[in-house]
Length: 341
Image (cartoon, rainbow, N blue to C red; front, side):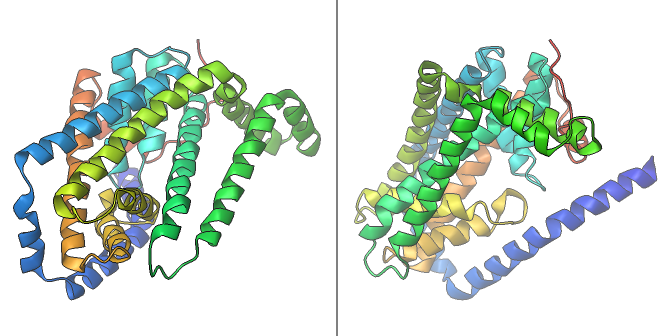
């Protein structure tokens, strides 16, 4: 038992090590180019009112996120179950290996008696929409950045490719029986690969059925966009305090760059990487590295505090032991083939 535990911890460290090294490298670079007196001075206009506003907006965003998830899960979880599980997922994403998405699927699957793999497919769809929204913000704002050393054409191509991918997913979901039949001809259902792959593909497609239900999809998108509205307002409000001279679109540009930066392997909670993304984004807008780092520290800190606060409460309210959930998720495999009713 003890040997297996040590082996699991060793594997976790190996998986986390590349991200930790990336974070350390970025932190070293930041330390070399910033003036900490300027960084500290940049916080002079930060008030408790601003911190409370950011905390409130992020909290409301989690509520909307939970309501959206409840729609795609056919109303099976209660509003509070959806909310608490969303916050728990965001908390788990701050920890090594970024197990938030898997954690949400496993926790919610247990609450509503559905396959974690089915629930995970709904989270995948949610993340795909997040990527599309991020790319839209980037494509619309890149041409407005004067002196930017990159072309908006590259991101336009990427955006088109993502839309094409979503269109392909939409067509597959609408014609999933034909797709599964075709896949069954390519991979024999009675083969080892077929028994492993086909049930999982069927479960994923089942979780994406909302794409085949226009009214339900619109309700889901309504809540998703309201959550994004809260995140937009968070960036706008904080940027008004730090950089009132910047135009409104600068908030969207900064948010898109930092969202993409968050996908880079990093230490737990994205330490260093997120701050570096803020510095890079704001440098294109003429903001100094020290001021940009202070802004990044504030936003990233609040992005950690809010899910940690609500996520811990969520674990307590739902009667789950955080340590046991996190330990179990390190070796979790979304391998259930059937839902349990």
